[in-house]
Length: 414
Image 1 (cartoon, rainbow, N blue to C red):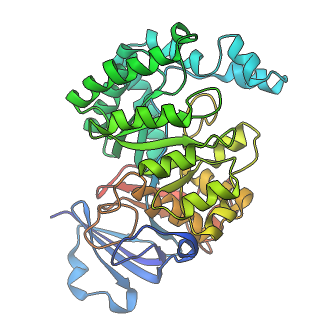
Image 2: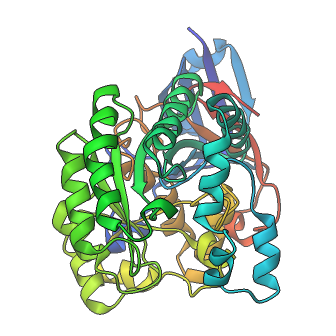
C-alpha cells in the first residue's frame, strides 16, 4: 500500500465527517485543524488530526511530507468550463480595447461563431491535444475536478466531435471530469432565420446519439434575450432529461432572462453566471436546491458588473465558484484567481470562497461523495501551499504563486 503522511500542517482546511451542500450563512463555516497531520493511503484520505494525537504506528510510511508553515486544502472543483476549443481569440480582445462592441465583433464573424468555425475545421486529435495542455495547466494550479461543455460545434457532427473529445479526456486524465452538452449555445449561421429548425436538430438529431453513446452527464442552454427563451430552454432540457441528462443553465448573464426561474422549475443542478439578478430571481434561487454558480473572471474580462454574491448568500442561496475557462470571455482556468476575485470584488469571505470552490463546486458536479473536503474515505485530491501566515493570505496575495504541490488521487502531479 502506498502511503503519504503530511505532518506539521499549519492549517488543514475543510475537514468534515460528512458532506452537505452549504447554503447561505453555512458557507462561512470552514472547519480546520491547526498543527495537523494527514494520512493518504493509495488514492484515499485515510486519517487526520492534531499533531498532539499522531499515532506512533504511522512512522513507517512510504513518504513523509513536513508541511511546516503550509496549508493543505482539498483541490479545487471547477464546475463550469469550455476547455475544448480550437485556438484563441486575442484579436477580439484587442478589438474590445479599441472600443468595438460585442455586436460589432460578431458582425465581423467573431464571438462564439469564430470559435465554431475553427472547431469545425479541427480534428479530434487536434482538439484533444489542445485541451490536454489546458487540463495540465489547471491541474498544476490546483484543480482536481472539472466540468467541460460542448457548444462550439453547433452542427451535429461538430457537437458530437466535441463530446467524444471530452469522453477521451475523461478516460485518460487523472482529473475527475463531467461532460455537458451545450448545443444550445447560440444559433449557427445556417439557422439564423430558422431558430425552430435548429432546436429541432438538437432534439431529434443530436440528443439521440448523445444518449446512445453516453457522451454527456448534463444538458445546458444559454437562456438569454436574443438566444434561447425560457420556453425554448425548458423544451430542450426536458428533451435531454429523456436521455438521462440533468439540466444546468446559463442564466441571467446579460439580462433578467428568466433563466434562473426556469432552471429552478426544471430542478437544475445549477444555474450559472447570474450577473443580472433581481429580488424575484434571488428569492426563487434561495428557496430551491439549485446551486448558483458564479463566474467572476468572466465578469472581470468582459468589464461587466460582478455577480451579487453578498445578496445571494445573505438570502440563503447555495453558491459555487467556477472559472468559465473559454477563449472569448474568460481565457483562464486559474481557480486561485477566481477565489481571490470573489473576495476582492464580490465581498465573499475567504471561508465562503473556499467552500464555494471546493465542496459546493463538487456538489455542482455531483461529486461531493468523493471530492471537495478533507473527509476520511474521500479521494486524495489535495493542494499543498507554500509557507503562508494564514488562510486569508491566499486570496489576499492574489498575484503570488502560493500552490507548492498538487496531489490528484494520491499521486503528485506538480
